[in-house]
Length: 340
Image 1 (cartoon, rainbow, N blue to C red):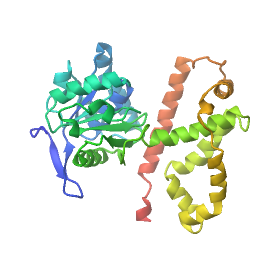
Image 2: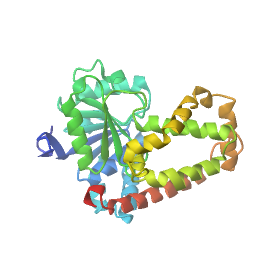
Image 3: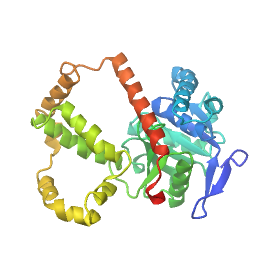
Image 4: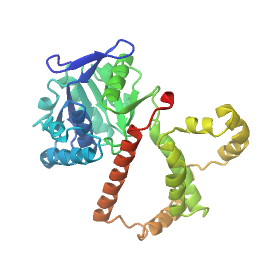
């Protein structure tokens, strides 16, 4: 830990964690810039590095724009001060010098992760936590041979991380439990919503839940039960409204007078029948996949196989981010269940 910069506090269990300090963010793409905004907004100094010179040059301006948008929704108190805490390093060694935490956002390729983590492990102070933003690569696959592997973990965000706060913390079998606890306290302190993946599993938690829903969605469209538009409406105007502030267990606990056990007694036979007929790998293979993709393309006003128009796609992304920011701002003012 860089004692000259870091402000430390104690969590509920008496463990020390970094309340503010310096974070090195490796990779200045969309995810890396989002992390820079998150840490800088929380009072940290954020040092960005990317092997691509253009990405390094563009990052500060794009972060300033993003922080201004957050401020417009009441999600950043002082965007100018936050932007001033973001800077760019000229090389990897400069980026990690004095870092209390490192967040890696390199390409989603195992060989790249192995090489990059070997460099980071050699350059960082032994007590610096090194986390990867990987979406699906398990921590054990790229940290096994590192001398300081106990301080490494996955901290998987959801795109866009500065608007969707959940962070999945997944360690390897050799990751020090205190590292997980320290990371969890730190991410909570900077405004994220950390969750712990207790054992390594392919895809972590969020992607596995998303895969289950997507698999059934593609099957229902491919087999002609529903149009892509109506399926999206079912989620955005149905399930998604509840899920924006309640998880599935909380939801079913309120959907039956006797709570979760009562719900399972009432609807368990249907779910058992559904599980027995659940879509399998064939959903993601032709001809089923081709049928579903053609229907989705038609619903989006595109020919089969046609890529989205980049400008229209960008406008839709900006619209999505605006709606997410408004939702996050709304949720921040809602009382928690324990306060009712």
